[in-house]
Length: 443
Image (cartoon, rainbow, N blue to C red):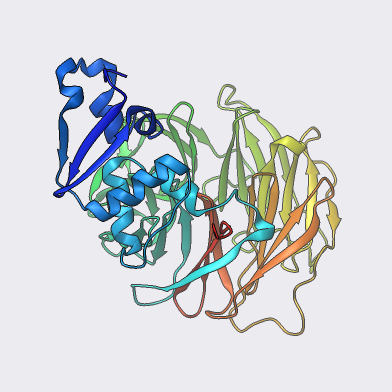
């Protein structure tokens, strides 16, 4: 630190505070205090004894300073949560605030924090958790974005083009895929500012040196080298999976759909960091047959793993509704409409499915508007949605350990986990739930 004396004085909005450089260092280099007192700023030694004026809310500063001192959060009732969040964002202390509010993520100890009504006509279609505890919700051609305090930002409007998928690049940027054209120009995907809703740039598909119209489908990111993957359905022969540099928006690769397979209408993409491959899943009922494969973009002549249920008996109730790769287990997990779990060994291409009837949440007749089950894997726990309930599976044998249920809003059409929160989007009442692992009270 460039401060010559450990004691530091502040005047925040006319109220005086005194602390130490050691306490401020807990905020980290990316905070406002790191910028003020980092040794690279080469401050005047005589400035250490000066009083630093900050024109912000003094009550919130007192709470955040106490958080740095003790690691604990106590918010007086006169300070609104959104105000404290805004001030923490200004000081670069949002991560500290979140860590003090939530305990370590555990699906078995999640509690329903709130249910938030939607802001658009019609039912929601998809929800995606952001890296900082916020989320985005798609309603047809509209996408509504919420920060971790659940304060809504300006929406993203795709000019009547239906949103197919969304993925957070970082806390400030979201990629959306849509049908045919995004806005009024060619291209089925765009990068948007999460705070303002502004379109930053569009992603194009080029074939034979010509830009083609296409529908962007399922999305996935490789965060280590900033590559964006998207299932693409074109008008001529651009069916497959496209790859773009998410920073520049330029297309860098394209994996064309092989005969007899289905990549351009995939329902789910997932990047496998350890295997350096992309899982592509086209699921029932979009297609009569399900296709799951792993693509290695270092060798575009082959799939490194592939499975299909083509040839299964007619009327087989074990049709795959969702799939997720579990690299640590060396398997792919799938789920059917009865929430039976199936497992396939990634070491054996086209291997036999091992089904496990774990929960059978479906009791009685199907709902009028059935919602097909979804899967998620987070911190070694497996999650599966069914009707208005999310089941949590743990351990090497994936034992059902708990269920998260909220009957308000009807069946769950989608859910997502991120920023130590689970978000569940209901199909009927245009509402989504926020589940958190709450810390026990200090006293």
